[in-house]
Length: 317
Ligand SMILES: Nc1ncnc2c1ncn2[C@@H]1O[C@H](COP(=O)(O)OP(=O)(O)O)[C@@H](O)[C@H]1O
Ligand SMILES: [Mg+2]
Image 1 (spheres, rainbow, N blue to C red):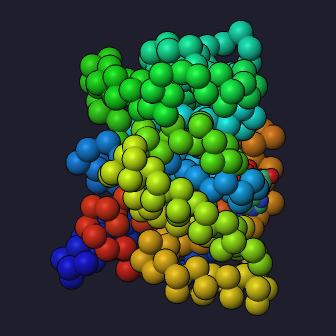
Image 2 (image 1 turned 90 degrees about the vertical axis):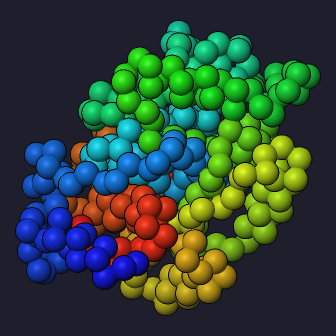
Image 3 (image 1 turned 60 degrees about the vertical axis):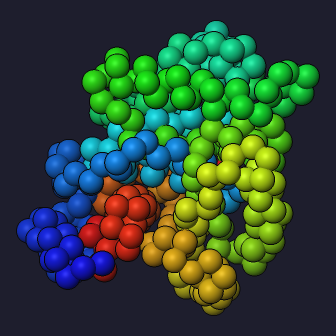
């Protein structure tokens, strides 16, 4: 990062923030609730980011919805594609999903256009969602005999990106795909549709276990189905800063993956886990909480890393 970039970033954000963490949190919360967060630079083309880890419970869904919300609040146009039959991402974004409503199953299995199922997330501007429902549970089986079964989502998404821009007069900046906890055909569809993979890593003893399998699967996808796919970010989740174990896991993951690991780790926080039961993200549920601020910082790092090739020197929120 150039000096120029550092000072410009600081100047843009500095006026709003106090110089203690508490004051900064309070200022961010006020800015957040009043919709006054500074805009992030828009990516030069749509980034399609697959949020994947075949382990369940590592924070895929939580990270998808909170990063999406954080990006939208910083004026990035975002689409969330819910690819988990549990539909938890749809719930957290307050988007209806049940048998009677068209959902991502109708796109992937039924062949409907994505524009038939994408809806606006009601609590945000510039945040869209393709919901999932339990209907999707049969998709892994239904897809097996289908022609080009791995690229059905990719095809629908390519068409939708054009339609979205025509319809809304604005290109989507980021598409986040929330994967189910497996490496089955739904996840493969996401890998073929995306260019980037974001891997949430839970800060626990077995954190690195299973990542080898994920990475070798990505090698296979690259070799046979999508040569552009690459891991662009790892996000440490559910960090308990007080334990030595968490610190050891963080050190291990950073040593292994270096700059791919976003500087901000998401702390374990009750507010983060409570938010979905109110059909909310933590950004709206408790904007000044450590979890909300961490997701804001992480979202900013994702964008600035790609934009400038380096991370911001300081945490803004
Ligand atoms: N930072 C966090 N602090 C506390 N609980 C969390 C946090 N992140 C996720 N959780 C909780 O952990 C559980 C698993 O998270 P989830 O995002 O659903 O994982 P996945 O999508 O990988 O299965 C959920 O109950 C969620 O509320
Ligand atoms: Mg999930």
